[in-house]
Amino acid sequence: MTIYDTIGGAPAVAAAVDDFYVRVTSDPELAGYFEGTDMRKLKSHQRTFIAAAIGGPEKYVGKSMAQAHARLNIVPSHFDLVVGHLVDTLASLGVPEHVIGQIGATLAPLKDEIAPGPSTQAG
Ligand code: HEM
Image 1: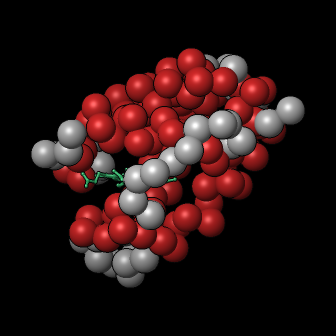
Image 2 (image 1 turned 45 degrees about the horizontal axis):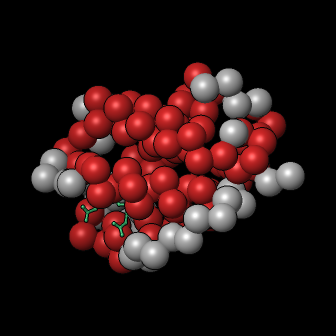
């Protein structure tokens, strides 16, 4: 059984992505990154990306993580904040802690691609 099946498949992923972006765009440290972003499109890409990453049948066809985030100059501490919001989202939806850990472990290696900047750089 994949993580995707364990958490409830496509409807669970969609609920998680909606809740996740409410949290991220309400965070004053992060909101600025999303100004001018088409959130409908972003959520759609994020649903397929997350689903594919956790074993779902969806095929992600968007940009690579390095390409998608290159212009944003994301600092590593902001990556950690975003992952923290994802963990909070999954916990609030009742996803068991060990499954959240597995999802976190799947996404953690993306840190270098998404937030390659020095930690002192302004976000
Ligand atoms: C595990 C971490 C992350 C994952 C899996 C992820 C995933 C994605 C995906 C799938 C897209 C869509 C790419 C496309 O449209 O082709 C995207 C875009 C975006 N991400 Fe992330 N992301 C992560 C972390 C972050 C962080 C830390 C920030 C900011 C602090 C961020 C800000 C954005 C923004 C602003 C866009 C839209 C870019 C645009 O409008 O061109 N992401 N991300």
